[in-house]
Image 1: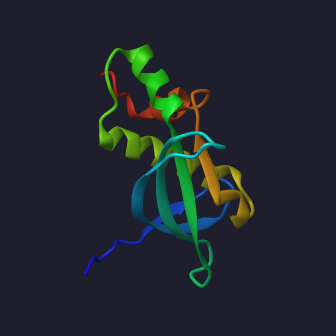
Image 2 (image 1 turned 180 degrees about the vertical axis):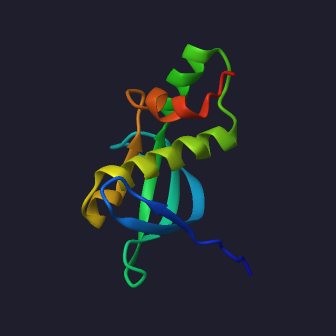
Length: 119
């Protein structure tokens, strides 16, 4: 039996979210970007839970790797997804805004910058 630790995040918008990580899985679709889907169980009121999917697009991590000259390890890919989740918590005011979050080539650098991965 897996015991999951519920974590709390206070968004900049005043909402307090609770969440925990469910799983990650490769995502390959013909009609959408490929990558890794990170799934989080989320609630904003401790009553209604939903699954937030953060898709780390393959083009995003490949772009980051090309710019930094090294591969992103699995923990860093998870960190990119979690930072995207936190940004969504900060910017959204509705739970439906959190259902499908994307880490793209255009935002991965900003998401990972606070972690100072190159130092």
